[in-house]
Length: 118
Image 1 (tube, one colour):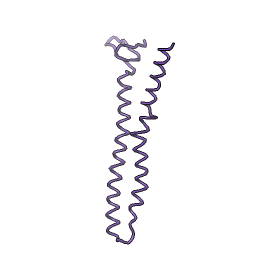
Image 2 (cartoon, helix red, strand yellow):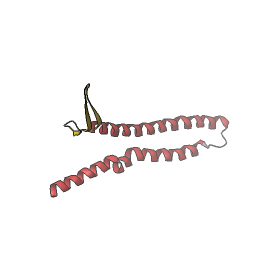
Image 3 (cartoon, rainbow, N blue to C red):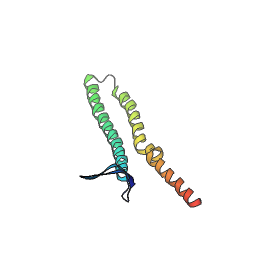
Image 4 (cartoon, one colour):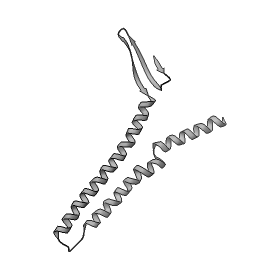
């Protein structure tokens, strides 16, 4: 039997001689997954940032040790820095403007308009 209770659970509840159990999802699970997805995005960015700093520092040491003739590490840092900047914008700026949370806000706003006007 499909059920939905006050706690936001939607699924099937099975009654057996040994007891009953539920199979399904709750809104809390959905919220947890959404937060988990956001945290994973941020953590990927911070790992990217730490890799950038570590590798560029290492390349700087190599550049200094190999001779003062040509300073090339700046070009690697510049190109990778642009990629890192795009990653930063995607995680912290565009996601708030164009991501799932923005989509959810727009849906809620449209539902309010329809419920208020209709």
